[in-house]
Length: 542
Image (cartoon, rainbow, N blue to C red; front, side, top):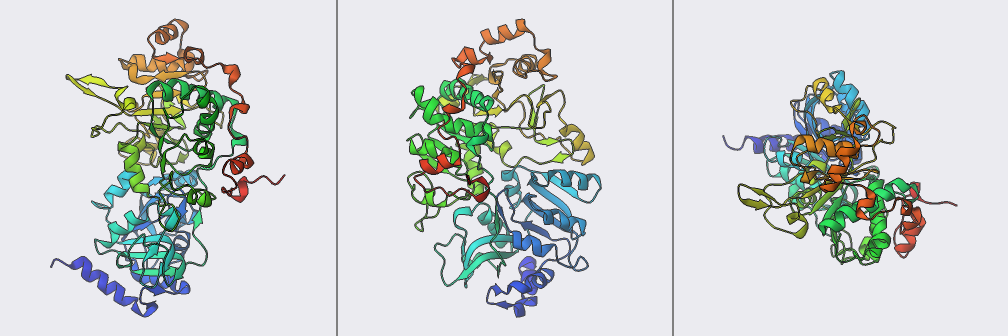
């Protein structure tokens, strides 16, 4: 027998045929369909990355009878919604493989401690996607689309994101693909996923949830973050002639984006740095785009409110004939790993060796795509000036390296030190019975750390002792930083391993909010010529 999966799928689909009109189901039949489709112990992938949520299907799954559907092995990029964990509370699901759990990080930590969830592994996004084709092949995929036609062709539009990857891994191994659609129409604006990959389309009771995750209000950027942004531009971007890059989420990187048309312009850097980007269409990049800094942007996903602006800027963004951007989280992660000169991100903890993690005590947030962006892929062969500027000799072979930058304030928003002797992730490993310590970016991959104190050029260090000394020198008054001494600092500065602001021509007194190209959300709307439409919670009503 060589068709057992296919035969089983046919049997299951025959069991729900009376509830379908072709591929179309009724909204009110969603629970019954799931109870008949999903089998005990199935691997179920539920779309819910850190922005786009198959919210109708996740709310439906939590309503199924646990006597009929149980012991599921859930595969989810992001644990973002309460019902993502409710299914474990109700014993519908038992095992979990995931990448990120920001909004639910505290609750998932407690549930793991209470033995309510069995964790397979915490993955990077790309790692999780890859395993869907190897040893985590889904039996059922629950995904979201903007529109579907009666043949099952899907339009995923601005927020295509992970959908094609999930559907392909399921459909081509005789799994069952169930789609919630915001709207069912005669035709779709473009076919993002062909209908013969899709088994069931259910009109959702409301549009899927979408979070403006990458939007930052310029009004909330501090002068300390502006100082760090100036140091990064002068001491890293300019020094290494960085052309292609990714910015992680946060106010530190938002500050850099808003400094490019002002501070960057004053340094004569336009056309020399920051031309090609892999990141979500962050509104704080609008001034740099309008000022002619940016040549191209490919995105993991969309960003609420940026739709009209992107449609009017097809030279910059990847836009279809329908006028809507095409995003792809899988290809974006590949681009981030192999095609970029630099990754700039942030973290919650960095240990004295330079390992970093966003998994802390009582908070198991995972790490999403940062380990893909923030790793040095030894398979890379193409060279750029930035990549080559970190080259080293290995057995007589010269090899370049990606810039991996952590930009953090020495104390986090919770007033706790970012620099610690030992990561909380070590204890989390024991509590969650993980095989490995959940480190986000390992020290050997980290090339630079930027704080309000200065820059540590870790790639220049010759030993772990020297690396530790460089980290101590820029760790401020944290327990790690208090071990630094003046004599050692001066030697590190002389060798170019540590740079204070004055060493790279940055005056602390110049770090003022007036340097930002936009002071608030209204300014971003003006820069966009009225095309940017900020989400309600970011608007100024004064």
